[in-house]
Amino acid sequence: MNAFAEFADQSDYDSQQDLVGLAVYWISACNGFDAVPVSEVHDILTLYDFQISDQAVATRMQQLKDDGLVYYRQRSGTYSGFQLTVPGFERYDELSGGCPGMNEVGSDKPEKTEEDQKSLKSVESESTDTAYDVFISHAGEDKDSVARPLATELRDRGFEVWFDEFELQIGDQLRSSIDDGLKNSDYGIIILSEAFFGKKWPENELEGLMSLEGDEEKVILPLWHGVGEQEVTQYSPSLSARVAGEINEDNVDRIAESLSTVLRS
Image (cartoon, rainbow, N blue to C red):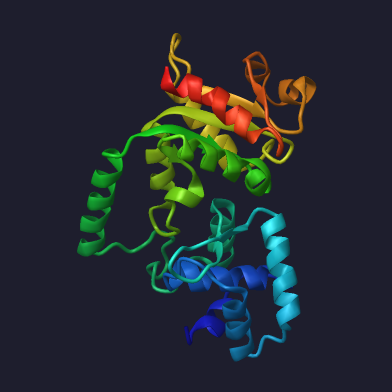
């Protein structure tokens, strides 16, 4: 990790919070760590003379989590720590221009070797063989309160659930992994909330699920989280016309039971 100082200096950041985010990106996406402890972020920033206390790093990490850019990944049998969400990866990939060595000089496209191409074909082949009962689309701000608990409840009931924390390994094939999840899922749960409205990535997932629906085939299962008919209608009149559940932190198990009936039909 001795190139982090140069990597950070070449990145387009202007806040302490984004510097911490770049450190998480560097350690996880560029160096292959599945989970990044706060202590690891503090150590690398201290090593390269970025004057940030351990308390400040912890505070910035919590802000990144509150903003839906990282989540805490509990790892069984090994250490736990933070990992980037999809929006977090997109943000710091854009700010940094990608991991060193990914891009050709004068090109924004990743350089792919013959081994990369073989690996990509292998990943694509494996992914198309995987079928999911349901895909869960949500804003990062709703992950802790309802999205993760719902995904866990459904998985505990025996369903194959595509949920970013269960499936994604941050890396070059991030977008294709999500696309595979969408097209190989029987249903898509959309958790509509104020945080969801206007977010680019969840909207892309919603559009992908809508494209899978036919005239007689229902794919999208909407859930309202902290919003009502007026807010949903302003966002999408067609979605507001659909029968939807209202989910909150206290009724996740009941919502999961109701969804189970649909998923088994």
